[in-house]
Length: 483
Image (cartoon, rainbow, N blue to C red):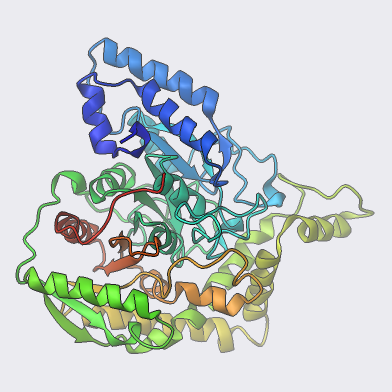
């Protein structure tokens, strides 16, 4: 196994024992990036990363202690700010923008000596489920380059799955970490809303956005969450709660636990191959002593409509700042301020972003606010209540992550509704603000991954990681990567 295919945990042990150097890890990754073009990166920090690797290697030579994050290369989704580095959000309108500050998660990882390898491709402003909406062209799925990696964190997930990054940061608004994690066969976690600071994350929908970890193993996912979670005074929605030692407390007895199987998640639209594999995983967990209970989340049918009203309304407000005046792209030809702003937005935004801005603006407009946005917020409350009631009976909820395996590039891009339905199983936990994790199951004969979603109570990331780790040890999933 090449170094770029090892876990962060194993690489840390090899660095500590001086079996390898940080430079060797980085060169292995760079070789994979240059030899296999998946278009996973928008910007590579090759020169800076090599200098940082040399610094870490000098630390090792001096016999200094290394944290578990020291020198382990990390990819960062291109809507998370790194001071002085391009942050495009996959959009033409942010061409040349370089933030003057670090996102809080980046500051935390810099303190732990993590090594940043580059900024990853994404659906423009995180709006998409296939990574086809990027101004920088689509990302390709490592298992089958004719298929999408999922979105909007497709670049981060494809990089991890293919050995072009050891681990990565993504963002999840309605499934943007979990759905691509399912399509590419890696572990992806959306934390509880407020568990990880949003400061420095370019906003799409502020009441839904969360930064989360992407990795090839549950232990690596836990380790990365441990580094980025915690209270931040710069984020008014940040939760002031202690951060558990996720990575060192993964052992848990599954016997006697109760898992909820929501009947609404196993109906029309679920691919038979996906359902068959999920049902088999349920059977395996049952044999391990976990009690399955059928539950109902009755307002699930309203989740997609609710999400696409709330998310687009917040997007129309958040994206009003991109006007060509202060930063980013500005149209070259205009007669006055109004035409400059209008043409800048027309030329700078892609079709999907324009669609969502128009939908959101309409939902917030005079005479329609209560009929659309107001009712959506009431529906969101009912969806949250469904989860609260379910967790009175069960320890966690198990569902498919996505209704299908990865689909062909171009297959759904002309049908927005079908594309939106790709997130049908991931938007509900986002609306409820609860944590959810996608775990890859063993790869079937067609070579395309399937993801299993675990949903937990507020701030119970630790329990989700423990359940996922137990499944990993039970060998119900496959950690091999597409090389």
